[in-house]
Image 1: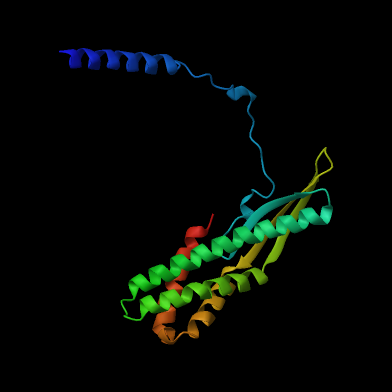
Image 2: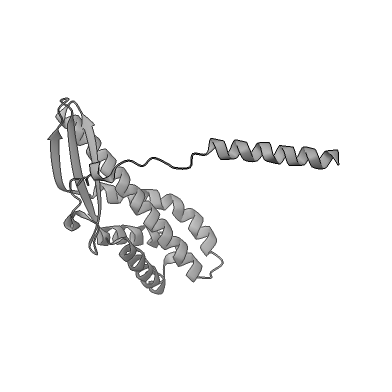
Length: 189
């Protein structure tokens, strides 16, 4: 009997603490005071499409050139991440579709090759456009869009893979190209 009374009292105390600690209504900020912000280069022509992978980033600095360098570095990092992720997805899908005993070993070797493909692709980037804004505090805010051709990424990937023994057949390259194009189309905005 005492255990039941203790349990009931404990439950009542816990319930009262829970009810008093949680407010019944949450104050919301006024939506009327909100407004949409349009970032530079958010238009369709600056997004990834069937032909190019694109990245947009900004960089801030009190020095004009410093802002440009930071923006370029940030855009390259975004693009490198996109390329690396895409190539990894393509190779994983390719190796799932090829049930070769050597494919697991080839996949492991290809991971390091992905970095060199990404680095080569980044060396082939083109700056599409830049905008520099000067803030009231004197800081330059530079926005940049860069791009790299999907064809050049595929060519670099096929070149790197052709150096691998397990990837000599034309049928392998054709299958890889098909998977590559499917994965790249997923990136189109």
